[in-house]
Length: 464
Image (cartoon, rainbow, N blue to C red; front, side, top):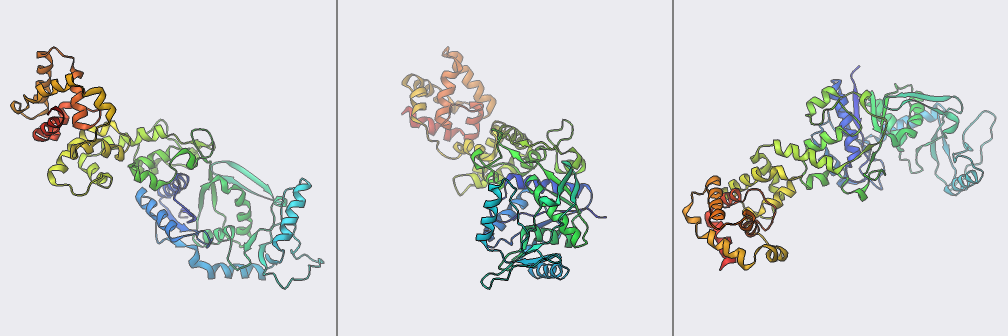
């Protein structure tokens, strides 16, 4: 049997980190088993689903490189199929109309909670032999409920959490079609997984309570029940469920911040899964190694520092021109001529080991092609009259030196020795004047990249 997995997001918001990890694991398992990975958009919630959210999900998947097999499936294109299956369930006495009003159900729930009972539908409209049903109200359009088994239990061996059992008495007759005729989540998922031959459902453990209902529906339809693997949630640094209060949770926010998709995937792969002590690996390696048995059942904790370290490792390994091409959207200016491009590429080589992401990198090398803004506190700290006088003395020698890193560095050292200075006394004011920062790599390398004339012009602005 061909293994078929799926990622089935609801388009009601961004593609979040948790959803991206679910998609990654489903994709990796399909690739490991030489199977298929399906993308299905569960858009039957017409009030909350939006075209913009669908686009965000697709863009996020494309950016991550989690490519699906075959077309994208949309639930709203399958309404006729859902209605046909509901009708067959009604005809086979496996579903029934329920005319209970919202007010009735609210009162029932309140009464059960007061008695310390678990709130559930009491089956008042469920047909039974010898049972007299209430008279149908004329002003209510009924919902359709699935006739869940009233006794026994439903069990499955979860590929992550182990054996799980629910008593059917705990499960009520859940709604499969709303009063306006639109089918519900638990129903559509089952029909879709059946029709699409899904063999393995990999999803978050917030769906564990849905699984027994779905298994019972599979059995009622005489459909094969897929394997289930429920992934534990991702926690923030404070041990609480990851949310916006912890910072970025949207995949495309990380793209905007200059993270690399391969670093995000590598990091997500290590959230709840491991392969020995391997930290950095390609997606080819990941899909070859991936096994559901190596997923931990404990919650995973998101660590920004670890992600930053990993992203830095990937930035270091990229060639400088490729980084430049990725960074172009992060620069705060428009036209970049060939000379500026080459200077920026040299700046990337100089700075890329010092940054966590491409936005940081672009901000740090912007001075190469734009006059830097210098904060008043840096001017006060480093550009006093005595230091500027030293800079003026060095500037008078710049026309004499061959404009290369080693030669510039040698000139500065000779100047320091001749004037009996400590190196920072000349290097720090140069850093501030040329870059707008007092934290930089080699000042000689920076001068070499900027160029002789630009270096002198920036210096002259402060010594005249």
